[in-house]
Length: 263
Image (cartoon, rainbow, N blue to C red; front, side, top):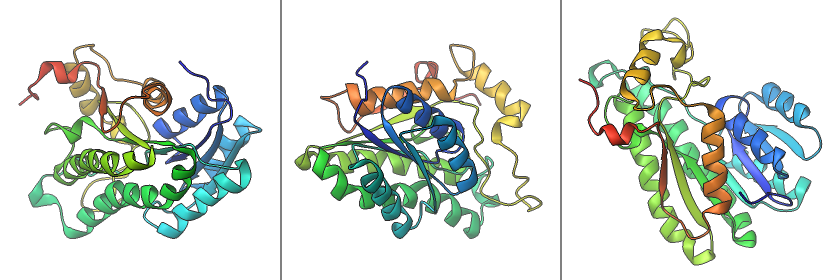
């Protein structure tokens, strides 16, 4: 794989999980990294652990102003922006349509879709200068049912569409836009509702043994993925897949090979 010396990378949702693993991998390979997360204390903690060449900023991915601030940090601290990794997201607790109200719908769509849109919009001028690349973290829920509830599944389908259309538009500027679609990958992914609400609690999805059992049962490789495995796929799409755009790479342990979700 190519080294990343001299590259500047902005990662959203970078304080934990896939985002943190991605920031650590890119930094280890020589990149300068900006970690953007709503939990600014945790983002700064990760940045401090990385040392020189890492910076953190807090903010809401749904805010164009906050996204502009993150891009501005990349350019002011490190001179440019080469790679944008859009990863921040929330879950819907596997809720069906009848149990999903407008509040939950708005929260999941605004973070998981609007957040990616705002990131692309804010970063586009900077990426034009470098002919950079974008990698969005989608999901097997962008292709199959039963990988989330109704609104999460709809959001991840929307991200796949965003990847494909933005890839077409950005190609005129020499910018590549791709995605990765993890299968079951234990992270700190949280439900979009606070503790004590009727939807359940705010624990990580992967603390549920039924969820982990389902992942192992439906994955041909017989295990969940890891954030580090997804991070390596993100790095490949960002740097090495130089003649690829508009593609979503599945990092799902062979789930796609199975073809049919469990009933």
